[in-house]
Image 1 (cartoon, rainbow, N blue to C red):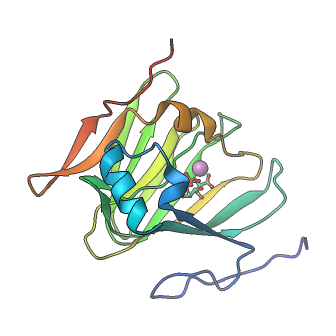
Image 2 (cartoon, rainbow, N blue to C red; image 1 turned 60 degrees about the horizontal axis):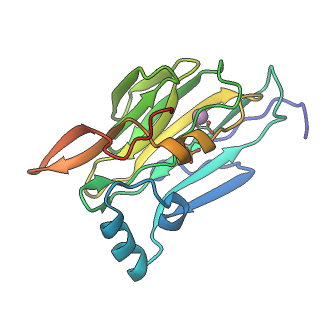
Image 3 (cartoon, helix red, strand yellow; image 1 turned 180 degrees about the horizontal axis):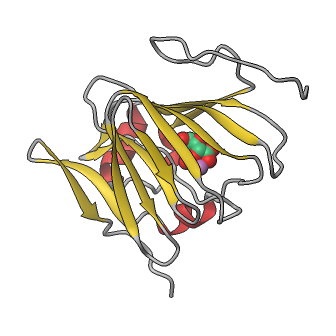
Length: 193
Ligand code: 6PG
Ligand code: NI
């Protein structure tokens, strides 16, 4: 990997980076057990393994001092009443932060700490979100027709811990109730024993 300075563009519309090293496609089957309405999930998956979101990553050495960046595109849709979302994760190196810049669409970042603090921040074009160290984060697209597109930057050595979220879930869910967006406690959240 060259150590020469480089530029890339995020062309409108779509904002797919002009240079990227990795394209991740996450489907319904990749979020097994993460949506609270399992019946709705199974029915949807039996029809189609829908693409929920995609990530274009600009890779650098995964070491302290380097920065990793890219684009996250969460597509519009719902599983039952629950909006399409990313898997969500803590960083393996817990004390690493992240910046998100929203380019398109509307949605929320659902966040929590290992100690149980929770926060939900709205995302809309032009908004910059600072995710401090120790906060797990999950992007949720609440638009009916627009992709939620964010540009993210995080430390090279951060890593991704998906296991904790896969095992316990997030404490808060983002649902559509009576035509409005509602933040509700996750009935399936698994507290530490
Ligand atoms: C990261 C970022 C971000 C994230 C995507 C997809 O740490 O890499 O938070 O790029 O990976 O938004 O979300 P998931 O990693 O939770 O699938
Ligand atoms: Ni992250």
